[in-house]
Image 1: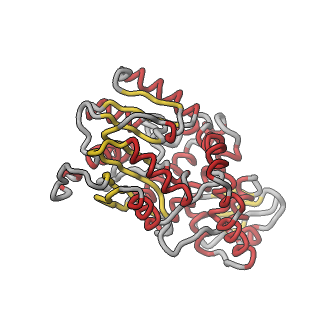
Image 2 (image 1 turned 135 degrees about the vertical axis):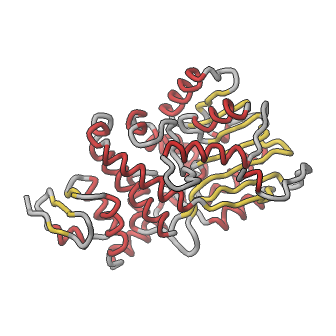
Image 3 (image 1 turned 180 degrees about the vertical axis):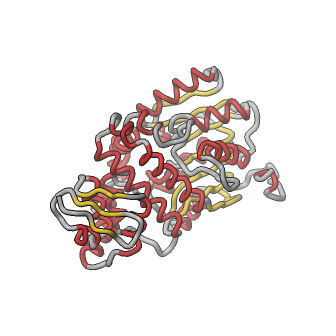
Amino acid sequence: MQAAVAQPAPFRLIPRDGSRAEDIARLDPYSAAVKFVRGAFDVDGPILEAVRWFLSNYDAGARAKLLSLIARFGPWKWISQAQQRAGVAERLRYHYDRSNEFYRLFLDRNMVYSCAYFESAGMSLEEAQEAKLRHICRKLRLQPGERFLDIGCGWGALLIHAARQWGADATGCTLSFEQAREGKRRIAESGLGNRARVLERDYRDVEGRFDKIASVGMFEHVGPRGLRAYFRKIRQILSPEGLFLNHGIVRPQPEAEDPATLFIQRKVFPVGSITHLAQVVEAAEIEGFEVLDVENLRPHYALTCAEWVRRLERNREACLREVPEEVWRTWMIYLAGSAFHFQRGSLEVHQILLARRGREEPEPRTRRYMYP
């Protein structure tokens, strides 16, 4: 084994395949990530610092530019909507149907897999995720007895919170077998079986009308080409006086796909695609929505991802009892890269509060109800 070589940062690259640390340090982010996932080298020190260094210091030469073009114009970008629908369940299960115990080892106690809301310095991840659930329900002005739908409900934290704390009649839908199983177990354990339920169903197949709808960390799977159909379906199932909160990751203009994006597309979210805020708002308005409020939670997601990475590092041995080492390494590098991009501002996450255009119920004159 070749000796480790110190880098200009508080970490060391330790080759495991006979290569030199200096050569690894010169790799583009995609190639370095692939080598790390395969176990070709280890990082001695905080993985967050190593990923920050790679993303800040690589030379965007010919190979990096080629990888960026592949990420931007790969053939999966042009598959039909029918093909997308046929494969969406398989792609989602690729990411989410890992061991529930694996996710439990780095998420908060309620297993919320989206941006937390750190209302004050020093909040724990558990406190910040509970604050996020409250923040969503306040924005929706959720009332007892209202029919609430959580699109892409994960392991059920938001719909359980909506039913228990706000008295809503809460429904969640997910395509993940593991999430649905755990969500149903949690609902039964909480004694909310008469007011909360999880459907193993594509949101496009959900029927009925709902007073309030939330989609948290799901529309990244929709992609730019599917936005109008996404908002059209939600408008169809939203009551005329209802509210819809869309919480999702966007890429600010003129940021575009890069080698790090290609790694995520191939290893984390197959055929995933991040759109721009302007495209989201445009699609919503074309499909008959009025934008009531937009809030950027970018700094909160940088903190959230960084805490997830620290928990993965701390719980390494327990994680490896649940998933192969390649999966653990993939999630480490993916979440560390996400923390960097959210901190830098090349990724953002927005909560967009929407209503059907022509809604007659008067809106509050201020935002005080959101921030009591």
